[in-house]
Amino acid sequence: MKLHRFGPTVAIAMAASLTLAACGDDAPTTSSNEGSDEGSEEGGETLSGDVLGSGASSQEAAMTAWIAGYQGTQPEVTVQYNSVGSGAGRENLIAGASDFIGSDAYLDEEEREAVTDTCGDGGAMHVPVYISPVAVAYNLPGVDGLQLSPDTLAQIMNQDITTWDDAAIAEDNPDAELPDTEITVVHRSDDSGTTENFMEYLTAAAPDSWPHEPSDAWPVPAEAAAQNTGVIQVINDNEGTIGYADASVVTGQSAAIGVGEEFVTFSPEAAANVVDASEPADTGVEGDMALELARDTTESGTYPIVLVSYHIACTSYDDPERANLVKDFLSYVVSEEGQQAASDAAGSAPISEDTRTSALELIDTIQGG
Image (cartoon, rainbow, N blue to C red; front, side, top):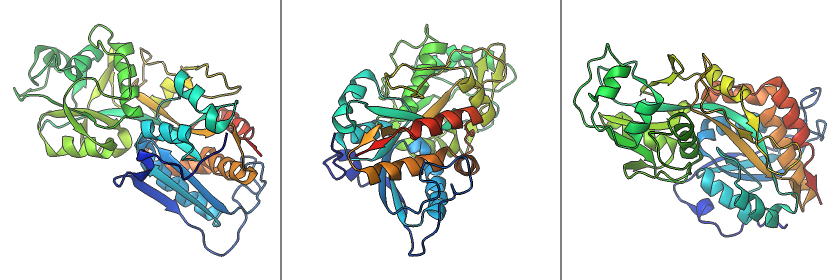
């Protein structure tokens, strides 16, 4: 189960990837966990070393805040994160090229089996650290407050509806003046957990209109862009476009989504309501926190297109110091301070107190040596 932290992997070497890093100075301090019941088992100990992560671009803004906050508690620790997408992050964990990863989808059965070569027989654990809506962004001047029912949205994304004045869109928006502009769908070009979460919603909420199985690769040929920020840039720059992205990067128009008898705009609170209604997934790891999200909910006030982004770490590391560093950083991320930092930076919904307690208990089981 050796972790080859500098092993070959295309994703880590990508020149286009974003590297976020916090580098310590020479002044030792105690961890912010001191005096808190949220701290890791290090109990305020000053640590040193480096931690390498990679994965979901949806966590980009939150990760910047987490790294900056953690630097203040552990200035002798350097944390680096390569924002290369969830799929590439999972490949990196399996290859032993990252100490932990961010992913908008939990490891599938094949990946859970493969990761035991790096993480040992116990495999990897999923810790939910980031709850965020996936926004349906669009660019249609003069049409604010667009409303889309699940079937209409699915038909647009499947390119069965191709112009903005289509009868189905008009039915959802009886008071709007819709142009005859052609619709251009924009999707992620890279393997993406955001894509997989969005497709899971379409499959659950509009099964008659969306014939594709959920995947981290988009199945319908259309306009493509890398990462969440790339999708939004294409949408903002081109009229008639529509796509999906983590809500933290959306700067223009976004649609309200049909839920039961109402249309709901995205918000952290509405996204968190869906998480509360969801069930745990069976990953074979005791206490694991992967979730089967309630995508087809009709509960009032819920926004059903949501991603829960995880930090995925080994249950066991060969190096005890490596294990302690990962435990300490993850404990900061799920702490009240860490979650508030992410909320302030990315507009995400902080995890609940019950989720925090379970997360800290799970993180504390990480073994080293």
